[in-house]
Amino acid sequence: MGRRQQRPRPPHSEASGDPWIPPAAADILLVSADPYLQDEAVRIVAASGGRLRTVERVEEALSGWDTADVLIVSSDVRETPPRRRAPAVLLGRSAEAEELWRLAAVLGAERVAALPEAAAWLAEHLSLASAPEPGGTMVGVVGGRGGSGATTAAIWLAHAAANHGVATLLVDGDPWGGGVELAVSDQSLPGLRWPDFAATRGSIDPGQFRDSLPTAGGFAFLSWPGRREPFESTDPASASAVLDAARRAFELTVIDIARNQEGLQAFAWDCDRILLLTTTHLKSAVATARVLNEVPPTDTGLLVRAAGSDPTDPHLVADALGIPLAGVVPDLRGVGAGTEQGRLLELGRRRPVRRFAEAALGLNGGDR
Image (cartoon, rainbow, N blue to C red; front, side):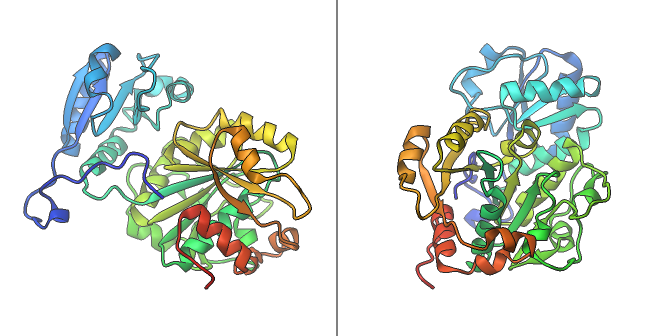
């Protein structure tokens, strides 16, 4: 479970036994020809304790494009160089916020910061780039087609990791999915849900965030409400704040991502690894190939759910899609009823499920 862009620790830091020496300032590269955004970036980076380099054109940034700790491009950048890393942040003005998200999808930017509203969040985000510890790992699970079982797989992955002593969070990334809380428990558990973070801006204390969430099966979870009544949705700024807190509070965050453009845009770009779930049926594989074209260029593996009577080799499906096989999800009897009754965690204790989850996450489980 490796991070996608882990920075090496500085030679002198708490990690190297010299806590009295502060960590090296983050090297932040900004590509922008907009004087307003340049000036604001100077102020924000100064507040974060980083070191800013600014160039106006992409061509001038090539030497530092892949080596800077944080790469920021502004809304006047319309193309990025091929086979280079994606920008960490797309910077723009609040008046163009809607256009910024479309441009971020084109450029592959991981985050969007619309100024002046996002100034405090961006300063906090950049300050974390100087930290010697990069935080926990985020793994996204995306169904290649509707009903493939992505939510079930995500729950079982989180459950297995927690059983191995990994501080784990399960994030419900589909507001239209009915709420993962209904699948992990048959009771209403105390704790915050997504709508409670709808007005959140800036940084969230990771300890308070961790303690505010409900738990089941040894892991914390952040769910959309499992009820029929309307609820307030979150916007990209609040979702970014929540994911930042999750990375700092947990060793592993498993995100059940909706397979639509909105879900991928909101969550997939924060993931260090993407696991696509499909079945061995042709139609499912074709649908998964289309989703594969929309996921960010990060470490991607395939999960295959195959019925016992299905003769198709999951490795052939992975070879056809061109991504490695990360695991085979057992097709257990009673999963549908278990989902409806909040009993998926009971099924997750079975040996085939443990083997699948441990293999997919790289855990050394054996047959405990």
